[in-house]
Amino acid sequence: MSMTKHDINALTPGDFLCHPFDSVTQHTESEIVAHNIMVICKRRGDRWGELTRDEYDAEREKDGGLSAAELREFDEIYPRINRVLGAITFSPTWLTAAEAAIDAAIAKAEPASETK
Image 1 (cartoon, rainbow, N blue to C red):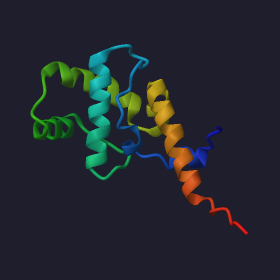
Image 2: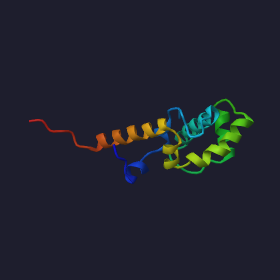
Image 3: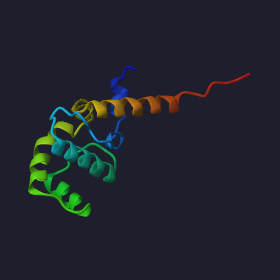
Image 4: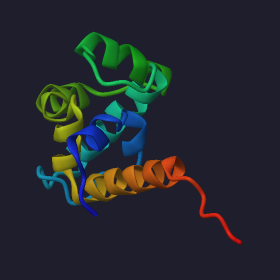
C-alpha cells in the first residue's frame, strides 16, 4: 500500500492509540508516554496541535497522576510525535496503525461494487 500526502494528513491522534512497540527510542517509559500523549490528544478533540507540559500534567492527573520521570519523558518525546509524520516514524506499530486507518478510509470512500 502506498500512502499519499493527502492520506497521511487525514490521520488523527486517535489512529495511534495502540502501544508503540519497538519505537525509535527502544525505551518502554517513553513508549508509555507517547501512548498517553495520543490518548490525551484524542480526548481533547482528536487533532494535532500544541500540548504543553502543564496540560499534559493536568490530563494525566485525571488518569490517576504521574511522576517527575514521566514529565521528563514528555519533554523528550512530545516534539517527536506532535505531528502525523513524527508519529508514523516513531514506531513500526504506529506505521502499521496508520496504514490500516488509511486503508479503512479508502475502503469507506470507494463505492460498493454493483452486482448484476
